[in-house]
Amino acid sequence: LQEAAGVSDSIETLSKFVSTLITRVKEGTDSDDEKKILANLAALSADKLNEVLKSADLNRLVGTIDNHLVGDNNRDALIKLLFVTRVADIHLTNRFNLIHALQKRGHWGKAENAGVTSMFLATEGDELMLMKDVIER
Image (cartoon, rainbow, N blue to C red; front, top):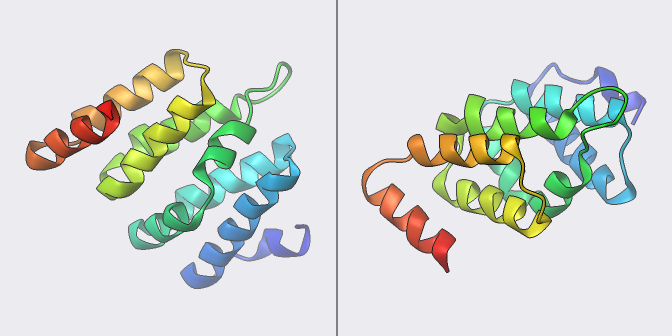
């Protein structure tokens, strides 16, 4: 992980780096790893962000990044980044999968409520109807 930390010149390399970090989530993360994941997700183009989200284990990502008792609230930051800040960049299928990952996690707080609300408000027309139908199932 240390060697990859400085890699961010090309979007392709950055996308691979983020995928590597998310894969690392399977092994567990610390606050520094989580900050790297957040920073790199924020830096990806919309297309690359969607590629990464499509291939990532979102259940593991959402379930492993934490709000720390002492330190950063990285889970809240992840939710804000993906559900609020970058929501316009995220394809509908990835929106479904992100909401589903939050639902599977089971813990539902203010950040989750605000994030899902933001995601629904950013979705319109037929896509909103489809999203509501998929979420209800």
